[in-house]
Length: 381
Image (tube, rainbow, N blue to C red; front, side, top):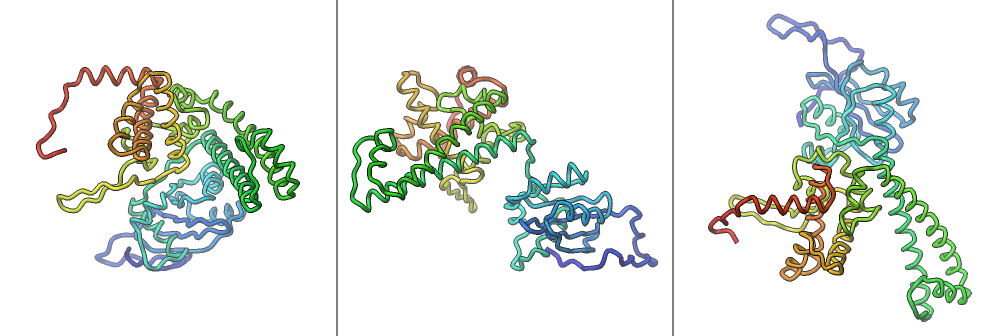
């Protein structure tokens, strides 16, 4: 990244001299925002790369609106995605009517890696990348989609908290050498726990009962959300996909047309192998694990449920057949991940064509029968 000259916004630009380019009567301005929880660093740059202003602004919506309103009208803004981007983005775009691009932080880091990393430098780099057209933007979902994502993530956090409390009770039982027969946390098991008279266990049980009610409330909200979401309803036609997984997938994918093909969708959720190329050598490693880890976990669970359903119903599907064939060669763990990726590829076509799972499978079979098998090239396994 080239060095930039720092000037003040109020300082007038020097008049053009003979043999130099005339000044631009309609200059463009670019604003880079490095957003944090308590403050944001804002850099203003002109079209030739001169930094006109670089200041820190408190992340109070009213104060931020007043300060940003002082910047030149018609400026283009870029803001890096973070854990607190949504509220500030809505303020800038909907209430202030600014032209804001949300930047993908991972892609921006790859483009503008720098040994000197400060908030001021980051803000300038963002503005400069925007000026050059090198910003990798993020998809910005609608309000309903954001609410669905937050519901799924909240439920996931509560389930993990409940599991943590249950494991704490198991730890107390192990420490005291107490063994309670039967399936854990059934009504009979909980009565046995109460009989131990341990105050720590009593508090954990109270927390677990509260979380049980909270999670059930989330489940009801998710059922209602799925019933209002045609894409989520479509996904529930695939065996193994319940309401939680369907809503998680529908909200994270949102508009399937933003993916050029099914492989890009699988890559978005990190379910494709990593590749390292050097000259004529290619090495395929483990999956990239990019994107939403919760969706990958839900898909892996759904793949196993799907395969079990197909076996019990004696109704093989392309996913279950693929899983069983790969399990014999590579083992159950790799087969599960590969089956989850195959599910995602089928989901792409379900959403693309707006058809249910069984219709998609039937269309796939017809397409396979119509197309002649390709001859395998020499030298390939």
